[in-house]
Image 1 (cartoon, rainbow, N blue to C red):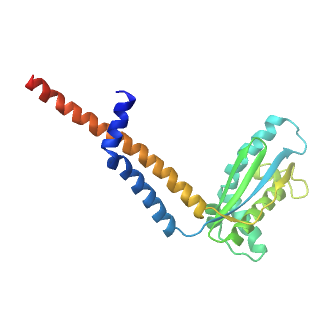
Image 2 (cartoon, rainbow, N blue to C red):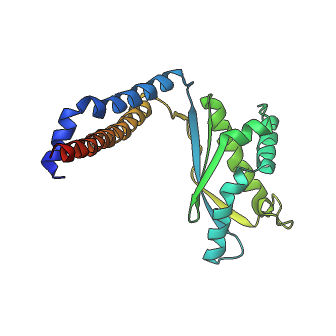
Image 3 (cartoon, rainbow, N blue to C red):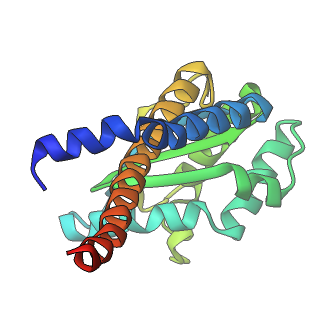
Length: 208
């Protein structure tokens, strides 16, 4: 088919093209209105070895840290740190709230909850655990709070939590889903036209 043919199909079946986009956007907005607010606080850490300066070793430490942060032992330690500060959060809730990712030796740790104050407290406690425990988190029994055997430089300290599902994020998500629905509508229109032509060909052959 040529481009004019595609345009003609879209014009003729415009309702089929637009309907999935509108439905997807409306459903996305509706779900967003029902979703409770979520807040995220994050911090960025630079992980380097205090005694071993090999870059590949340091990269490996940063690569492992996100998995450590999301593990049950780490969540239990964060829960203990918060408890000493008078904040009671069970380890399973800590584990569900914490997340982490890395880019080379820079690790970003975040906490996302429905309470902005709690998100900031969780992120701060997670950073404190990494700084205090050091290589003990990687299973090194020689690491102590006085001699953690790893340098943890806080590039970005835990800041005030920001809402992750506010109106801006909601509108952007709805638009993206609307575009996806529009693409689906175009394929549906082309498919319907193809089936229509396929059914018309036998009729034309019989008539000829």
